[in-house]
Image (cartoon, rainbow, N blue to C red; front, side):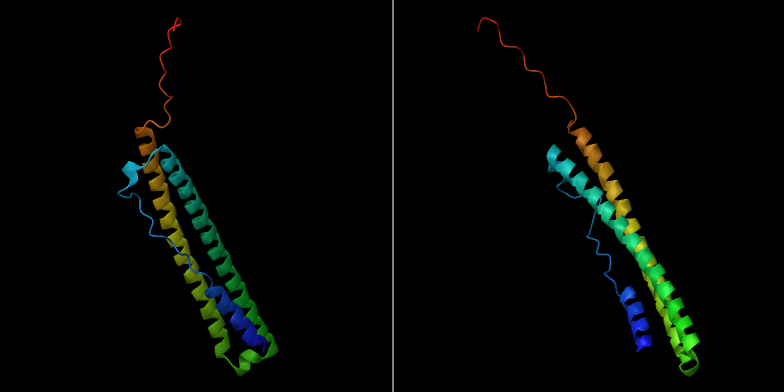
Length: 149
C-alpha cells in the first residue's frame, strides 16, 4: 500500500499543470492604432505575463526538486523494508519518474524563458510606440484670452 502512495505522489508531481503560454507575439497589426492609454495598459499586461512565466518556472523547479526527494525517499524506504529485494524494478521506476520530472521542469523553464524574452521585446516595442506618439509630452499651452473680453 505504501509503495503505491509513493509512486502515486511521484506521478502527481510529474503530471502537474503544464505551462500554457498564449501565442504571444512581439507585434500585432493593430499596434499602430493604439492610443496612449492602450499602449500603457498593454505594457502593464506584459509585466503580468513576465511575472506569471517566472512563477511557473519557479514552481516547476520546486516540483522537480520535490520529485527527486520523493524518489530518493521511496527507494530508501523500499530498501529498508526489503520490498526492493522482492520487487527490484520498483527502484528503477522511482528513479525514472524523478528523471521525467526534472526533464519536464527543464521544458517548462525553457518555455517560460522564451515567453519572458518575447514579453520584454514587446515592452521595448511598446515603449517606442509610446514615445513616438508623444504620450509623455506636456499638453500644448493655450493662448491666454484677451483681458478686455
